Image 1: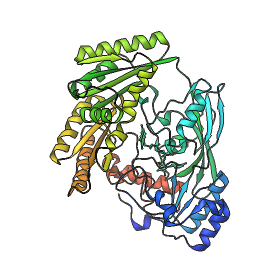
Image 2: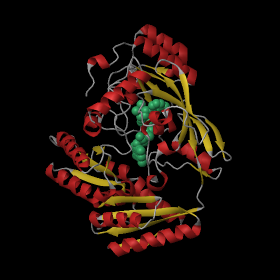
Image 3: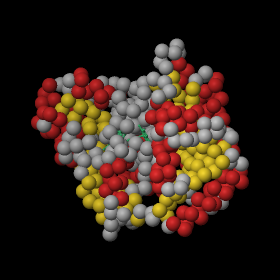
Image 4: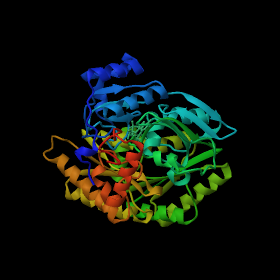
Length: 470
Ligand SMILES: Cc1cc2nc3c(=O)[nH]c(=O)nc-3n(C[C@H](O)[C@H](O)[C@H](O)COP(=O)(O)OP(=O)(O)OC[C@H]3O[C@@H](n4cnc5c(N)ncnc54)[C@H](O)[C@@H]3O)c2cc1C
């Protein structure tokens, strides 16, 4: 089901409305000039761009509430935005209106060792929160590669994953509760400080991953863990990805649950080596990064076991980081994959499919075949332990119809993921970029249900129109 014009809000931002917005948040927090709003026309997703009529930066929950009530009354679209680091065009305001930026809500309100939780405003960055927790000996487990810029509100709204997903899960596993503002201005609090609470529908989970289409999140309470005593990382090189895939299956099959199990293909290894000069083996077909954390002796045992399994299934070499600096450098190899690939060509399109773990190698084989068919450079890296792959196509828009071929290639990649029992997005979200593929993943009945849920939260359908629920 696609959005129709009757689904979408039709109001306009006129001078009277702008004056009211300035009155609510202060004139300096309402941007309208071409130069000021341009950076909010796009996010980290290439090819998508749309100009908002105004950018509004509220400084409190009350201001968010008043802006939303006004927008609903005037039927003006509102696109909530954190850092704009998403990779699914989820903050591109395709229907104009207001981009509502939450970064002024940037206070860490509480970190509690006794209750193992933190309460933060939505605009705090993931790294700021995680570092504040680490300073108290506590771990905030979700670890997106964008942690230094992404906001906690954005992480919740996208249900962000990261490098520790296999052992620790993703954002949804850590959200205890949120304060959120409905499109009509009511402020609700879902969940809270309780670890056990089944009173009512689980609205916290529903809002987690709702991509700014149901409500604006203003405050988040997250669960924490005691920080592990130690961690260690190793790297195994394989001739090809199929063998690396066997190692992944064997590691998990042996009852090990690593904190890290990431892979890079040969093109990615080379791009990272050119970028970061880490001494990676450029000739390997695949690199598998494996790691664990916990008590020293348990980590040692786990790393020994994973090293032995990699060797048994045919790794051409297996090494262990000798110290924290070496382990950090290895993890950096994985973290810098996207910036490294971004240097290969002017446009870098990164995608995010997930397949059942046993289908990992087959999916990579299909991705390579698709890239060859469309004559495109495609590198793949990802969270092997989660079956989550990031095929990345790099091209020069000056190269004839390269962009058209890239879009077709991704269509084929999504179809292949679905064919293998997978999904069109594992952690980046649907946004505008993958909205056309949602019916193929969910089916029409679920799409209609999503739309009805959206109307219940957002009767005028002003929040992030054209995306989830539209
Ligand atoms: C280099 C790089 C590495 C990345 N690595 C990872 C990774 O490892 N794992 C991963 O999952 N993602 C990753 N991402 C993608 C991105 O960082 C995440 O999706 C992140 O959660 C987005 O946070 P943000 O604050 O930038 O949100 P934005 O991009 O601003 O918004 C994302 C979505 O959330 C909504 N939203 C934002 N804030 C709110 C709010 N307060 N209330 C309601 N809705 C809101 C928006 O409307 C939009 O739909 C990466 C991106 C980059 C550029």
